[in-house]
Length: 437
Image 1 (cartoon, rainbow, N blue to C red):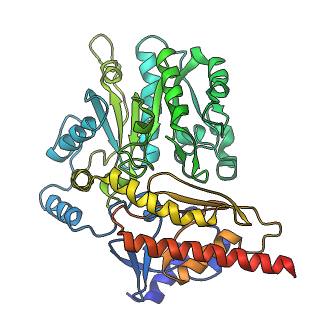
Image 2: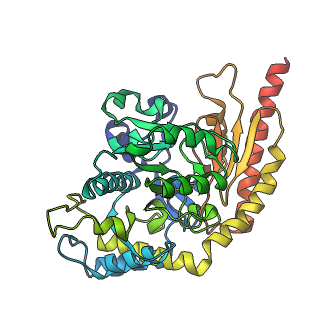
Image 3: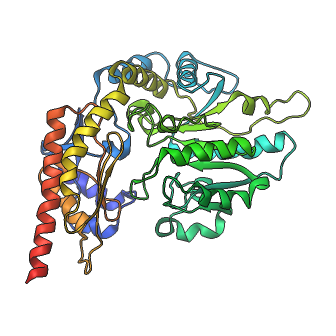
């Protein structure tokens, strides 16, 4: 099929997620037809560095030969089988692998297809657990203000972003929103908010150390450690949403490890399959699972997804986990992240730059808001400038960030950061020149 035919179908029928209609009117979107390592390739053969790992998923790049082989091999044997009263080798192996990556192995794994679904499962497990043990009044959640956990109704409630979710506010459960940001030594701010609702809290849910969609906002491990301790002392479950931060990205296999906590429920997704296929999971401690017995009365968790534990997706995930282990993904993220941070530091203190920060292989530049924003905002002007130079990324408000695949080489990373910094400096210089006239 021709490029023009794809564009025509796209304009007529595709509803692009998180995309303003006005940006589509500015010009046709690139037609991506192939992936190759850190690159996405369009119909005209142009190669673009996937600087945000396709929404933080493609941690192993595109077309990784071992993951492709795992998918092909499994597709020839078993494409799908339900997990209700059945099992299959790939799901069983993946559950064992994920349990083995936790601080203790006594875990149960409930599979789903995306991060929001993994979070939704965790919320339901938490509420029903307290009901199962005769404490049904504990059904409220606490979360970090401006955190994001997905776009299903339960996930929106604990990750409410006004500019995204306003039309649905009346449908959402009431939550305790912990003020954010707070400094490393200011756990007391959170503690006061939590204490007022201690007896009715089922769980606290967090994005560990980095609030992604809110603009890569970061907080100290000490805060998460203090929060974990508070939850343990006060019989409140801790739900850790590792969907974006898991599998080595932050310099540890899971971001909660930086704080030395042991969450009751851990949600994973995105990079779980190396970004190759939709696959997510909710990893629960055994004591939670044990409460769902039907020995005296039926306490079964009546929840599941059609493609829960899909064999092909699980095969991709099993291979991805093996690759992460062999490459020592956390150590690689630490090394490459330090290299990236050193170069991004050149922007710190420049006029128009509010902050430069990083965590593992995540590099963030936050710009000052524009006084008079035109039809296309400054971050999106930089995005388009980079797209012309073969780099694909998406700003988060005034935040520009790099979150490239973990397989990126030092040379490729240096070239990417050079383009990134150069595009920002050029745009700021033009703005400064215009203001000086």
